[in-house]
Length: 67
Image (cartoon, rainbow, N blue to C red):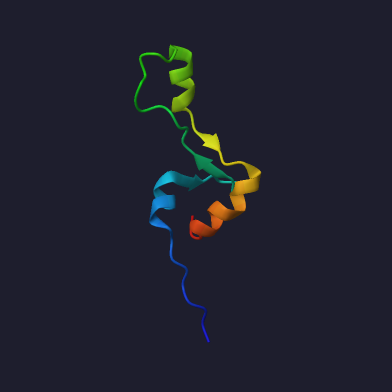
């Protein structure tokens, strides 16, 4: 008996991507509005992707089983 396919959590698939080594990449929060009070260097840093913390990685990977 074949195992059923797993469903991808569509919200998670739009927010997270897997790197080549299997780590989970995410975008940073606080970069969309109220930008006038934030410094240029802070806004530049918010553009860069970050990695999901190791304690959350297992849960996120369950949501995106096919990467």
